[in-house]
Amino acid sequence: MDDKKTDKLMQTYPNWMNYVFAVFFIAITVTAFVPESGNWRWVPFTALMSYIFIRKSKEQRVWELGGKLVMPVITFCFVVSFIEATVGNGGTRDLWFYGVLTLLGILTSIFDIYIKPGLKIYK
Image (tube, rainbow, N blue to C red; front, side):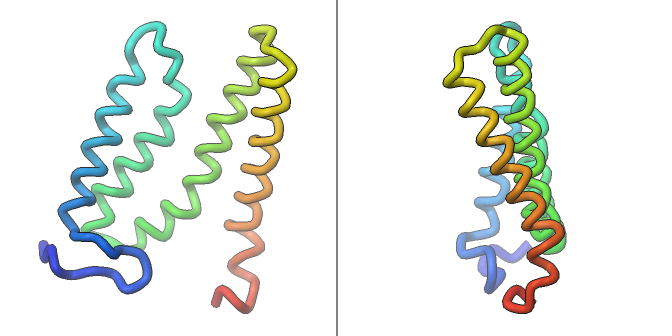
């Protein structure tokens, strides 16, 4: 691997930093399985980010696809938090916070996946 090679659009840092970020997200993923931590909902996001940073050094297409998948995965985390707040008698603030974040995540995902590819300014 060439540490000096950079992508003009996305990567403005050395290639070895991808592995540093991947190890960081793998560590977060492993610690999410600690009993009673409550962080299990973030496992899909941290696992996806680990995969993206590991594969980014080899394939640019993974970075582009990962960019489209990040918001739906984060939206999943917000939906789980909203359901936990509803079932666990969360406060009004929790319900509004996670509800609004879920709606914003859904709208952003729809824009990134369906609307953005059809716009002329992004082609």
